[in-house]
Amino acid sequence: MDQLPNLGREQEMLEIMGLKSMDDLFDDIPEKIRSEGPLPLRAPQSEEEIIRDAQKLLGANVNLDSRPSFLSAGLARNFVPSMVPMIATRGEFLTSYTPYQPEVSQGMLQAMWEFQTMISELVELPISNVSMYDASTSAAEAITCAVRVKSKKVEKPNTVFISELVPPHRLSVIENYTQGVGIEIMKLPHGSDGLLDLEMASSAFGSCAVYVEQPNSFGILDEGLMRLREIVGEKTAIIVGVDVTTLGLIEPPGNWGADIVVGEGQPFGIGPTAGGPIYGIFACTKDFLRLMPGRIVGQSIDTNGKTAYTLTLSTREQHIRRHRATSNICSNETLIALMGAMHMALLGPVGLEQLSTRVLASTIQTMNEISSLEGVDLAFPDSPVFREFAIKIPGLARDALSHMDNLGVTAGFDLGNWWGDKSSWILVGCDERTSESDISALKEGLSSWMEALE
Image (cartoon, rainbow, N blue to C red; front, top):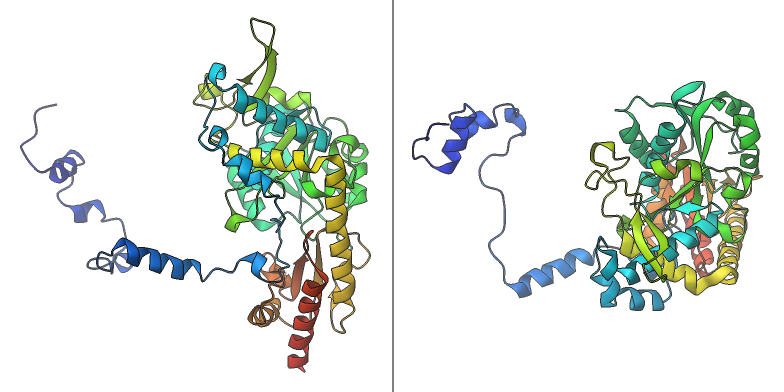
C-alpha cells in the first residue's frame, strides 16, 4: 500500500474505509435516536465523593437476608457455611486460573476432580465436567450435545422436545443456541395439574432428546417423569434439569433413565449474588463423553506411579480441537464451583438429606398457612411440590407484591412476568431459613392487601 498523506489517525482510517467524516461513519444510525451534544456527565469527583455516591446507590438494593423473603424462581436464598468463603479466599484458590500446566497445578486440579466426583455421585451418572456458567447454558449445551450424538441414530434428526413450562429466560438461551444450527424445538404440554402429559410425550419418540425439569418452574415434583424412558424409547436422550437440593430426598435422575443432568449449582456454595456469578452443573453417561462441553479433569498416574490429575478431552476452540470444538464455554465459574464442592463436602450425605428435609418442611408449612386464607387458591392443590408453589389471588400479583414490599416482605415472584395469562399468580419460594415469623409476616401482609381490596 502506498504511503498515506500525513493525516490524523482518525482521518487516515476514514479514508481507508472510503469515508470523508465521522458523520459518514454513523450515517446508517437514524437521526432520531442519535444523542446531541456531550453526554450529561458530572464533573470529576474525589475518591471520597465517589465512595459516598456508590454507597448511596448500593443502599437502594434490598438484601434478601434483611427481611422475610420468599423470592426464588430459580435461585435459592440458601445458607452458606462460613467455612466456605474462608477456604475459597485462600490464595491457592482465589488467584488460580486455568491449570494448563498440570505439573504446577495438582492442588487445583484435584479440587476440580473432587467437584466432578461429588456431582456424579449426586445425580448418579458416571461423568461430570467442572461446571458451566449457569443452568440455562447447561441446558442449552446439553441439547446441542444430544443432537450431535443422536442425530444420525434416530428417526427425527435435529429435533428436540422440551417442556412447555421451561422458564422464558432459559428458553431464550436454548433458542439462541439452537436457532442457527438447524435444531427444531417442539413443546411438550402439561396437564391442568402441572404434570407432564405423558400421552403427548409419546410424540417425542424417535427424536434426538427430551428436556424436562424436576421440579418444574411451579415447584412441582413429577413422578411421571420416571416413565419417560419407556415412553420415548432407548434412542432418544433424556435431559433433566434439577434443583440439586432435592437430591437429598428424591431419586437421582441417573437412576430412572436420564442421559444428561443439568441444573443450577448455586444452592451449594454461594448465595443468589444478584444473579451471578453462579455456576451450572453438567453430568452425563459415557455415550456423550467425547462430545460434551466444558472442561474435564482426569485422574491418572505420573512416571513415578503416584496419583496425578490433568485436564483431558478439552472441548474449547482455543485448544487443539480448534474448528472441531464442541463448545465455546471458556473460563467456567471454577472458583464458584469449588465453593460448591466445599459446601457439599461439609454437608455430606446426612447433611444433604437434612437440608432437603428442612426446605421441604418449610415449603409445606408455608403452603398450608397461605392457602388457609380466604380468597387464596393453590394453583396446583393436588401436586407435590418442593421449595416453590404457585398461588392464585383475587387481583394483580404485582399490586400484592408491591403492597407487601412496602410492609418489608419480599413475598415472591410475579408469574405474569413469565406468562401473561398468569398475572394473578405468585410463585412463593422457601428455603432452609424460612422461619415461622417469616411465614406469619407473609400471611399477614397478603391478608391486609386482600382486605384493602374489599
